[in-house]
Structure formats: C-alpha cells, structure tokens
Image 1 (cartoon, rainbow, N blue to C red):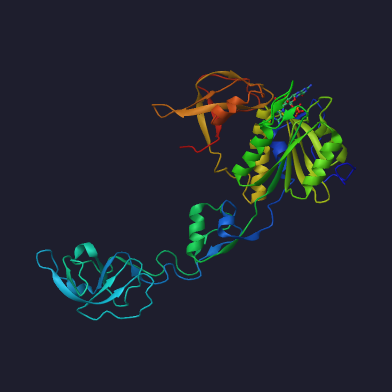
Image 2 (tube, rainbow, N blue to C red):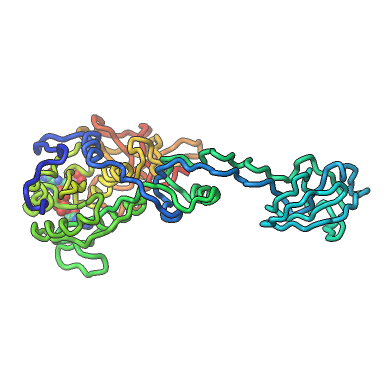
Length: 431
Ligand SMILES: Nc1nc2c(c(=O)[nH]1)N[C@H]1C(S)=C(S)[C@@H](COP(=O)(O)OP(=O)(O)OC[C@H]3O[C@@H](n4cnc5c(N)ncnc54)[C@H](O)[C@@H]3O)O[C@H]1N2
Ligand code: MOO
C-alpha cells in the first residue's frame, strides 16, 4: 500500500528547507491544486440541501400553471358589480363553488358569481375576485359591497416564471429557499456536486477522548472534534477517526483503512520538529506529501500532498488546537469549497470580511501573517471596532469560544496601534 512505500509525487508537493517559509497564498495554492470539484450526481431535494447545483434548473411549464384566485371570495365580471357600494350593494346568484384543486371547467355567465377559494382556477371569463370580506358571504346568492378593479385578486399563469425560464442557476449553493423553488417547479431530483467526504485524524500519544479521565501529561482531543465540526458546518460529510498514537505502524494502518472513504484526509499534530512527529515521519517517506513552514502565526508547520493510488488529497495540520483551527480556516476551507463546487477564490458567504478599527494595540511577528482571535462590534457612532480576546499562544484554546472573528495582520507589519484599520474574517453572520 502506497502509504508505506515510495510513490511518484502527484503534482509537486511543496518542499522547503527549515528556514525558508512559504507565503500563505503559496501554500493555499498548493493545497487547492490537489483537488477538483467532485463529479455531479443526482440527489433528492432534501439530500441536495447545502450542495452546489450542477445544472440550470428550468421551469418546464408556466408557474403558476393556470390563472387562479388570490383570495377566498367570489369570481365576478367587473361590469356586473360596477355600481356596488356598502350603501347600495349588488346581489348576484352564486352558480357554483370552486375549491383549490377543482378541475371543473365552467364559464362565468353574465350576471352571476362563483364562490371561489384561494388557489382555485378562475373560470376563463372572470374579471376579478371579490374578497369574501367585501360581501355578506352568501352561498345561494351574494351581496357585493365594493367593486374590484379589473383583474384584481387573480394570479396569472406564468407570472411567477414563464415556461423555459431558469429558476435556480448552476453553481448555487442550495439553501432551503432554493429547495422550495426546485420543488415548486416539480423537480424531485437535481444534479449537484456531492458533499466531500472528509476523514479527520488526530495524532499524539498524549491525546485522550473527551469523557475519559486524564493521566499525567495527557489532554483531550480538541482538534478531532473541532476540525470535524468545522467540516460538517461547511457542508462536508465528515468522519472523525479516533486518536492515533505516535506509532508509525498504527498511523500507516489507519491511513490505509481510511483511504476508501475519503475525498480528503485531514490530520492534526506531528508535523513539527519533534522526535515523535509521526505524521511527518510516515508521510515524508511516501514521497507524495510535502512539509513546509508557512509564514503565518499560528499555523506555521504544514503538510500537503496526496496518498494512495487514487491520489487522495491529504492536509497535515499542526497539533496546537488554535493552529489547527486557523489552518482549517485558511487552507482546508478553500479546499472543501472547491470540492463542493464553489469558487474558493470568490468571497465566502459564511466568512464575511469587514475592516474594523483596533480598540487595543498588539504585537505581530513582522515576517508572518498573523491571525488573531478577536471580537468585533459596532460603536454608537457606527464605526466597527475589533479587539483581541487572548494572547498569541496557540495552546490558548478557550479564547476560540470567545472570539467571533480572526483579525488578520499582514506580513511586514510588526504591530497594530489603537485606531489602525484591520481586516477581520467574521466567524459568523455580519449582522
Ligand atoms: N523545535 C520546534 N518546536 C516546535 C516548532 C518548531 O518549529 N520547532 N513549531 C511549533 C509550532 S509553531 C507548532 S504549531 C507546533 C506544531 O506541532 P505538531 O504539529 O508537531 O503537533 P504536536 O507536537 O503533536 O502537538 C502540539 C501541541 O498540540 C497538542 N495537541 C496535539 N494534538 C491535539 C489534539 N488533537 N487536541 C488537543 N491538543 C492537541 C499537543 O499536546 C501539543 O501540546 O510545534 C511547535 N514546536
Ligand atoms: O505555528 Mo504554531 O501554530 O505558532 O503555534
């Protein structure tokens, strides 16, 4: 199996000497070059929710399909009720009753009314519908107290969409409102890009399942859960594999087992310079995964490449929980967006960006792009402000829960002063 052997590099995995850092943009490009959008397949509407549509969906017939009533009331010819006022109502015989779904075909005879419900097809020569509130609600005959305008309360065939019109475009990430429209035009199944299957593997002999008690030197698996949740939240089908110990054979075995169900594998831990950095040790040998330092903080040590005969993409993230989280945002997220069929270079609707004024000063390593856990808000004067919620330590995980954005300080800047404008990637809606 290729994980243990030497195989030809798929593409050119990034490889850099220890001192040489690649830029965030370069590593993101290297990661994106590993993937293509997944091939489309047919899915039922509810399974398609959250997926990217791979066809233009067209209304094959007019929507609505027939002229119908917008109100519960009476179909009339306007001339017959032209003189109707509350003081001098007009009385018409009610010659039929039409419920929604009625298939009855009938013409409206002059001087008569048809009792009609919302959604029922209007008789062809109906001039307007008089809402029941403008009448006495009669069943055998009806007293009309107001005259409607010509065409009032009639919903015309095709006024929502004419036959042949595209109602949802290819490339749309399907939200509930799109699903409603697809159903409204009668589609039971649509072609979509499937959800990428993401296998998340945590490594480290010290890492323990949440729920288990900790022995000396141990800590709970924040990354496995955080990264799997992040992939699920983005719309992927994500599987969390239990923690793999710092044992090359165990890691190789796990990777081999998981390849069959992965469109992409994400590991955390074991990629820096330590004696037991098993991910680097095992994957370096495959020849198809490269390791590098990226000029960013946190998240410097990274690996990327492919694995196995199918060249399954693999991203190896650093183990510090904040580094893993930021690495997901910066590298894994674009990769999953491309697999899903989104343009990873286009603005990410789930990650709006704003520019905010720093409400506090902080330092930044000038040679690195810094991603700071921060909170943003709108001042009384309408200005956006941002402030870090913790120091830079990439082990300070609880600050993630308090942060609602990542403030991004570019390379070449060694600090932020109060009042400086900072770009912020929002981790939730921009409301
Ligand atoms: N001599 C050097 N040491 C380190 C360097 C370096 O360049 N030279 N880089 C540092 C940086 S920056 C980072 S980031 C980390 C990355 O280390 P690894 O990817 O090898 O990760 P580990 O050593 O396995 O773990 C680091 C840290 O994170 C904890 N961890 C690991 N997995 C999990 C998990 N699933 N959930 C929660 N916490 C986890 C682990 O216990 C360690 O404390 O390396 C620096 N060192
Ligand atoms: O890059 Mo490490 O991610 O600074 O902690």
